Length: 137
Image (cartoon, rainbow, N blue to C red; front, side, top):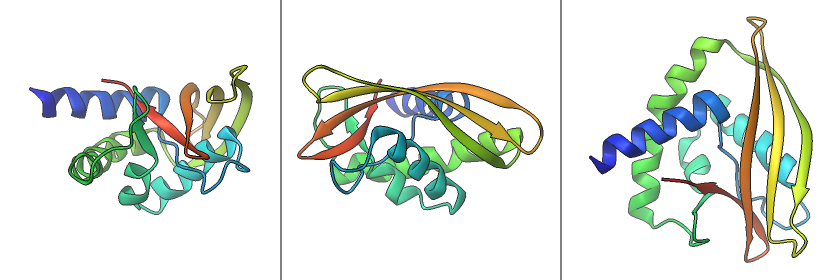
């Protein structure tokens, strides 16, 4: 049941909001930069790096076991996402960083070579100086 929920969540995130972002390596990366980086990892099928980009909703980093499970789910969800075509452009429309600077809501648009576009949202948290995408279950 948990795996099914995780799969459905990953599919929804990838297909509808592709909430795959990363730890930015440092707080000098903007949340929008993180969103774009996650798509580069998706394109290169580096699912382990994408899994490392997530934290739980309560701000805790994922365990190694949770990351491994996510890698598998990301791979499956990526196959569904590919049905839209190849991503040609990601435009960051809005970055709303909270007053305390520890969370951010990013709105962005994905354009595909098929002519499709998709308006997406991502929630990020700043943890230990790095931006992480928030995994919502």
